[in-house]
Structure formats: C-alpha cells, structure tokens
Length: 484
Image (cartoon, rainbow, N blue to C red; front, side):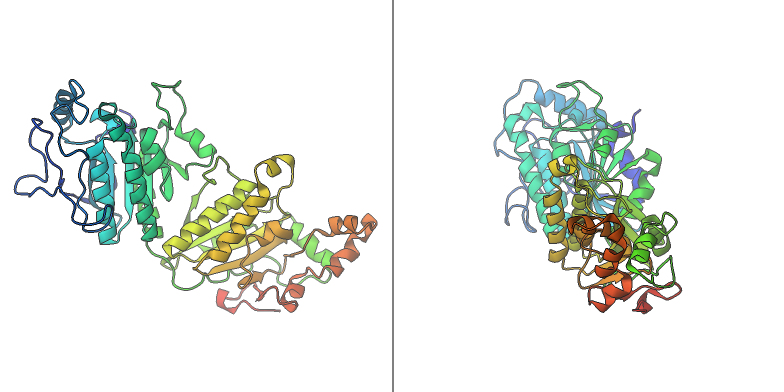
C-alpha cells in the first residue's frame, strides 16, 4: 500500500508518541447516524465569537440539509455511511493534539479512504477548529495531507472551504506559530493549494502525486519530485524518515535563540591581505573554506529549506534553520557562484519566516555578484534583489552577516546586515570587480590590480571605512571577533 494511502490514524501513530483527538462539535447529517463529540459530549454548533478566533465554534455550512447533503446529491448519504463503515471515520480529516519528539502540536491528518480525502463543508469546519485550538494552545500545526480536492457532492459550498482554510493559515502566521505540511499520496486540488503549498515548511513523501489538478482531469505522472525541483517543496523524505524529520523541524521552529546569532569563527587565513589584488585572489581561491564548511562548523545540525515558491531553485544559495547550543538560528548562505533570482527570493522567504517566528538570522556572503544573463533578467533579478534588501531591512529579529569570500556589488550586499557585518581575512567587498571597474573607467586590463587598491576592498579597509564591525579571527570565540 502506498504510504500516502495509509489510514489517517496509522500515519499519526507513526509520527506521534501520543495523540488526543479533538471533540468533533459537528451535528449529524439528518438521517445519517450519530455525529458530534461522542457519548456525553454536548453539541458545540453555533457562533459565540468572531469566525476563526478563540471563542468561535465552527458550523458546517447550511443549517438545514437532508441526508444527501446540502445539494441533495442522490446517493451521497449512502456513500457517507459506507465510507464511515469502512474507515471508522465520520469525516475526511482526523484532528487532535499530538506529542511529536517532545513537542506538542495540533495535527490535521487526512483520511483518504473517506471520499478520497475530499474537502467538504464539515471538513472545513474541522480544520478551522484545529487551527483555532492551536492558537489557543500556542502550539504549531502539522498537516498530513492526502486529498483528491474539493468534494463534488457538495458543489461550490465545498469549494468555499478554501478561503476558510486560507484565513486560518493567515491567522496562524500572524500569531507567530509555525505550520508544517507533509504531502502524502495524492495531494491535489484545494488541499495542495491551501494546507500543502501554504505551509511554512513543506515535506514531500517520495513518489506522491502532487499537483493542483488530479490524475482524472489531466495525464497522471506529476510527482512530488517535480514540485521539489520547481522550488515548491523543501525536502523529500521516505515514510521511514518522516518521524525524525518532523521531530527535527518542530524542535527547530519552536526554540529560537535569544539575541543575535554569534559571529562565526573564521576558518581560513589568519592574516590580512597586503594589497587589494591579494584580497581578491584570496577570496577567489578554490581552496578557501566555503559556506558548507562554515555551516558544518557553526551548527550542531541543521535542516534546509529549498526554493522560492515561485518555480525556482538556486543551488548556489543555502537556506534553512540550524541547532546551536540548544537554540535555533536561521541561515542564508551564498556558495561562491553568481546568485540567481531564485536565490534572492529563497533568502527573502527564509528571513521573513525567521522574523515571524522570532528566530535570529545568520547570513554568509560569498558571490562574484548577481547573475546578469538574459534568463536572470527575465526572471526579475532586480526585483528579487530588492525583495531581499526589503526583507532584511524590515526584519525585527537581529541579522548577523559574515563575509567569507567574494563580495561582488549589490548581489552580495543584499545578503548583508549593514549594522552587523563582519569579515574574514580572505574576503573582500567592492562596488564592482576590479576588472570591470577598470573597463568602465577605460583603463587597460593590466590596471585591474591598481584599481583593486583604489577600491579599498580589503577586509581591514572595510573596518577602517566603518562598513564592517570587525574581522572574525581563527582561534577566537565568536564573541571575540574583532578588528585586526
């Protein structure tokens, strides 16, 4: 059996050590058998607070409906009864409070065996109730999605659950609570376009069908791997890895570090360069430490996010959240290549998410500059750079930056925090590369070396000019990083 088609409660049992289901609070379908919160549970239908807010009790759409639902769809009541008998569930989602790796979370798990995990009016009510409860408890939400989309037998009333769910996502974001989605097989239609794609962190089970249109209305084959390649899924996982990944993510997103991220210790050269050209050559050396080296040295462990949520991935930019000394720090790191629009947008997404969750950010700058080919221009590189500048400027959490290699123009500076910028001995930052500066000034190519000196781009120059706060040094603790 494909992992995504597992019954909802079996999936919950695989990822959680404890689970307490939320009382239903919904009325029965007329003639459709007992419904509600169970024996001894009073019905909680009605509204005693603003929709989507604590104190609001969700309703399930029209107050008067027959056994065949709000549209009187022939045979719908019988189908509901059959699926209840076969699955033991009374709707297509199971919602409750779970313990996952020691973190309390509200879980929304789809039961695909119940009308294909489709979204109906009562499904929307249950999901709304779950998100309201998460905000009341101040805990994250984990959505285990497996759905064929909106329920045909309830027509446009079912479709209207999408803005209802979207409002819950928005209120939960505004409350500063994280939401993780797991894409099971299949995740299509409104479930993908709300709980799936709308989560802060999106994990996809390998082999799952994921797309807005299901296989019955278009050729099958669009899989989660393609969504990952398009920058719409953060990580691909196997069913056996899912519990560990969820535990890691919940721990990371609920334990922000106090104060700013410490300045990393320099890993490369221990002396500053003599000339500007020497600084350039050091920064371009293939043997110097790169972003992955710094991340490995800085964090106990870390989890990446991937993609800009707009169809792009830049392999030259690493973003995610890391664990250091029991607390979480977010990171956005350039890997020494020309940064593409998707890289800037992914970093901006990371900064915005970290800011909303109260997690400090570390950025590592290392790029010859922004990509400037035709494809980059068509993909909106200027707007992408502007978006990252704005995200860092707007961040309420502290952003710490370490320049670890090349610092080419605005493509580098977009990743930098102007008030907490540190440099390493094998780095430089310049308005433009010395070669291009010489060309613009109509100088001979051989004058690039002299131009490098005139640009004052060495790490010690950056400190003297007041651009950098200091030079991080090998062998010093992060708190001792200082000018040399």
